[in-house]
Amino acid sequence: MMPIHVGRYLRRRGSRKAILATHTVSEYSFPEEHVLTAHVWRSGTEAVGSLFPTDILIGDDRYVFLGVESRYGFSENDVFVFDAIRLMRRGAKFRFIDIIKTQAYKDFNSALRDAELEYEHRTGVRPAWGSSRPDMVALKRELIEEDAGLKLAYAKLLARRDEITVGGEAGVRLLREWYSDPEGFMERRGLAPGEKPELLVPFKLTLEESIGTVVEETE
Image (cartoon, rainbow, N blue to C red; front, side, top):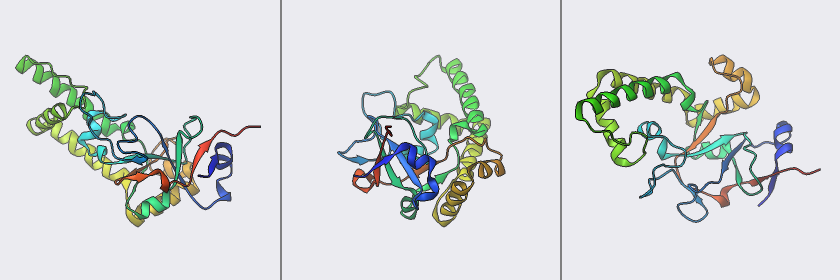
């Protein structure tokens, strides 16, 4: 597998055709040998990778997440590199910004916390709200249906998710637009210039499909 030298591909983007998408390996990356899959619940654990319960509520647990033209600074073979356009042709989606940084995400979490506190006051029960266990996520869904204000905040979050997550040829065009002018792309959408987009892959991704691994450049 070809090593992608970190400094080279960050400084000389114009010298190659592929827009790079990267996945940093973690303990949650390989439910099956050498295959990246969407985050799945593992019995006996309290978290699903880096996903929060709200991420599961909006369906983000269905995707493998990759950074776009991003470097995470890990050691050799920890980061696998893929062709972003190729993945999008197969059904991946381009997300402009980490949704956790959006106001809609923050507003929903605030409304959710209020609903959780009201539930505790009403029932005298204090569930493990921060857990991503299926029963905790199901309870949050019940609260969404019961609370009109929370339901509205949830609808706004879903709408924001759909605004910043685009697939198909439209997504490819937006990815190319971002790649040609990252700061301008973000500025035109009212986003901070330094924000990093993501690629959401709704299928299993084998390491054999990668075009290389990130390695540190040495003098």
